[in-house]
Image 1 (spheres, one colour):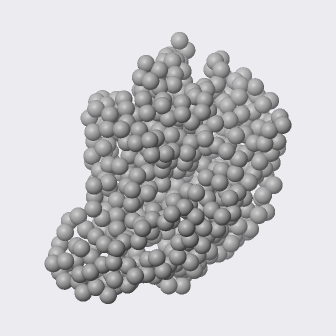
Image 2 (cartoon, helix red, strand yellow):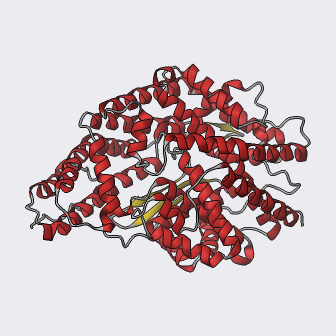
Length: 572
């Protein structure tokens, strides 16, 4: 078989058009593929997919680095409007061709073919323009939220910069910052309501075109959720309500008492209740990188080398700036087989946790890099987050300065308490976010009304998030769904965090017995990529894929016991 040379990655500012890729797709479509040489055909298609995904990823990174750069935004929009739709059509034809081939049984391709069969069955031509429009609306959410800023003592602050003051020991400062943040969000209340309604209508059309009853059913297929059902998610919510919500209430009550407050208010939730100043682990990106490198090298020297390579190759953008998109992520650059970490650091411990989390994702790019086909590196999202959340916990023993980290032993204990308490308080919040979307996408007509969305969110908030007094700020409470990017941009991508946290806590439980063995199992599991189903990936990492009340109760007991141990250290 003859294939033309693969398209190269574009130079900076070079316009990317479909014509760059059309000959390669045509060659794949027209090739005479014999059983003995289908591997060559498959390799070429995989490598072509790597080029396309790297281009789109890089364009997305560039526009999130600076949401005010109109040229970068337009380059991304041009690609998703004019190139990616044709790629989707061409890919669909190749999937159908591959699935029609009489191939020998190969274990390393079993899940690849299963996933492709699912994708091919789900694909509809009429959904291509709808997904293009949804990508544009997603970009609009980034622009709206990335532009939110206000004056703070004569300096312009975005939401990330305001957020650092929620840790301030001065309660008046915390309240002022929280009110400023809520005012910014509420200033865009109508535009975000309208944007979500538009997204919801388009997503329901996508599900209808695929002959599915609702978008929840579509997403479970699209995400390849073969190992659990919507009902399993609802069962997980109930287990959280039973086992975790009471533990979260204990944390909030302890915080209220230590702060000497009549009631705990939203601006009191994040502050450290000790008599010591807030943790300020680093100043500037270079200090954050150096400390994280030292910590990760203690976890495992090979993982430390991975991180060092990212620093050397400028694959880290960690500090917040005006105009930078909110949040943090780790993106995969599949041609280079490298990760890229994006975040909005402001000098807080939360930034250290975020970087360790995203480093776990980055290691999930490095470890399976030897797998030959791009589809073999397509890992279920539930296990992707095990990689990241486990790394936060595996790195925790090395936060102190004697390991090259950021803290004294007492400070590290405070940081670890904050992290572990955050795990407990996160799980009920995750349940709110996930349960909200189960309601939205199974009640699409009702959900077109923002008032109904507000009411649904508020009911779930009362069920899962007691312990904090929002009286007088009901508008901010009921519109909390506006403040969760996933609800707008990646619907239903949130229960993965909860499932993964259960997996990560089990990896950590193993590490408390033998850190080296737990890290080795972690790396072996990451190296499997997407070649095993979820229960086997969890098992490889030393965890069970189950989310019942018994499991959650055991893990809550472990976390609360560890917090008690750390509190004695933190007070020294």
